[in-house]
Length: 260
Image (tube, rainbow, N blue to C red; front, side):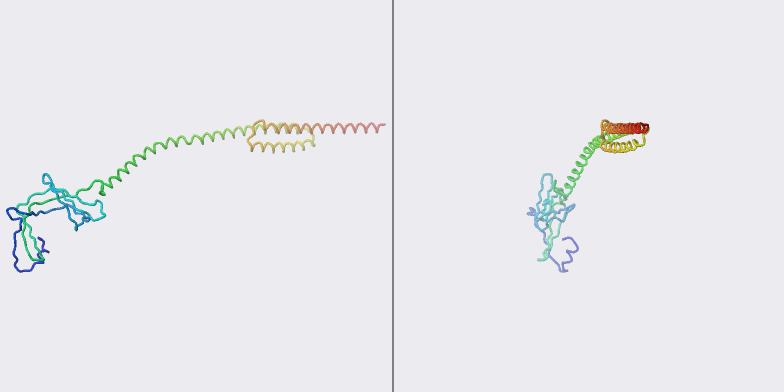
């Protein structure tokens, strides 16, 4: 133990320092130091690890992690270099023995990331998924403008049809108004009694015309009320003429009787 805290447990009495087996001509054991660049807290310190030395003095150290961790083990890889004059002092606090051992090599390793199980790999997969989704989004957007351009065609056609229908309807209404005005002017020269009947006929024809406008009729439907109104006016005028002739005959007969 090479720290000051370790020496604080020693008393001031003298102790015997022994040389360990590593100082023998044919040592039966060897001591190494291991330096980690980063040692995660997930490593299970109560379990044993594995150290392998491969070709070219390449070293692989595998340490188990706490149960439930991902990944289940932590792998370190590095290399070793021989020590020349370095030693380590080992103190047994239970027996008070002090032993000096010779260091054989210095091992320096770095933590490796297991492919497919580390958080970095998970983040990479998420980034790749987002990039793939973003690459698909523009293709979907490109098709939407063409559909948007085609969709307004049908409302425009409907508006044009409505405007044409309204224009034709206005023409039909103006023709009906002109025909009714001409007929009303011709009938105004008749007697006062016939004007009342014609007013009633005009009202009936106007009500019929209003019904025709609400139902969008054709030209033939507009002419039917005019024909009926003319027939009614002709019948009323003929009746009025007969009454006038009958009155004239009665007056002539009464005049002849008075002459007699």
